[in-house]
Length: 507
Ligand code: ADQ
Image 1: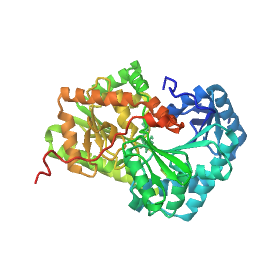
Image 2: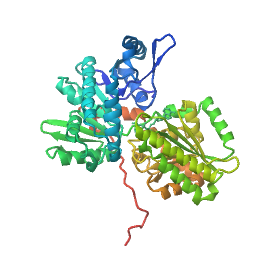
Image 3: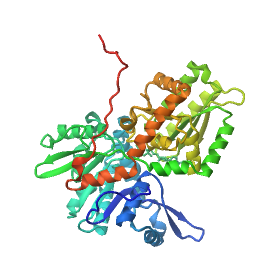
């Protein structure tokens, strides 16, 4: 993000808390820690805001403190000096990492909130440690904050922090943003700690969700489980007020965004252009269909592969004309379910290759690993079609990044109805139900043969939407919603419901 936030300065500083600090730690040959600024959506969004107004970022540094706690702090202090805001580590023990991060966060909340209830492990020890670590974060926030600061807490790892802050007597205003979906009531009530989580969330002054779908699920839970809560406003209001006796909690919809200009200008750089040209030459005139997903069952990679296989089966004209490049980014490899998923993906890729490979054409280029920025942007730029088909996703930044990098404006975005991004992009993406293999196959064919004129019209409009609601809009709106009266003039929210074909229900 290049421009400063437009929001009138709040009194006091901004203090951000997230599970991970925005740093990449590296231990040099001399054994000394070095801290480099990290990248990613949250970091890019928050860094200029913190730089502009000064502030603190609290989080886990991602390294084992037991080896060299003092050296680590020193490296973080050095980074703080050069960045205009300070970085404050919360150190976790091995057991805390196990039970708080891999346990409660990623084997209870992550699966449940993505509608994968059968993958939940409701181990009571996980909850105990989650509460303990949230308390640790609250203590760190108490240590670094002062009266008048605004405390902005991020994501499902830290849902209980505000309750602990209250218990510790911290009076600062607090906001929470949930990056993942919020589940439907039927699922939420299965959580053994459902009332505690609700109470914790309601301890924040402002709660932000990615989409109207998530907020509506949350309010439905509130309505059912805490009927005394009075919910004001309409479903399309950006911010709705919840009254709990004397207390008011603001509940808003703030779809996370990307720095459009940064993606567009990096995609135009000579390095990316050269790499994109090489990809084109290597592709021998074939259309590149692109998938970029973290290894996660919520991303629906096996479903996508089945859709691609059916497209090749049903539409022989696609064979030798399109190639699916699928990057799977390693993630949470210590959880057995992720290892199983990896094996399933690799088995499917092997089966599709075996069935369709002819001469010098293999239908899928599968890669398990990381791409650097140039490689990622060159693929975005070169892809004729992006296949973004999560089974459930808070937002999905890949969809937005693809459009921002599609400089020629001719790419086609195939997008799952279950990505948060769909509410904003529904008019111009080809929408699919990722569970409907036939629908995915149809969309791949439609995307591959779409006329240039249609592609340009759709992509032009997608790019405009992503540019209009970019990263600074996201930060500004959240901070505006936190201000006493700032939230009333925020624009209404986009909503989404699947629509039947025209005339379908004319009896
Ligand atoms: P994620 O589940 O991680 O995020 P997503 O929104 O798709 O999902 O973001 C993935 C990010 O990884 C993208 O920004 C992408 O550029 C980046 N990436 C791509 N290739 C990479 C590589 N090789 N190495 C490292 N990173 C790479 C969660 C929620 C989402 C929500 C985001 C932000 O699950 O729904 O959109 O937070 O709120």
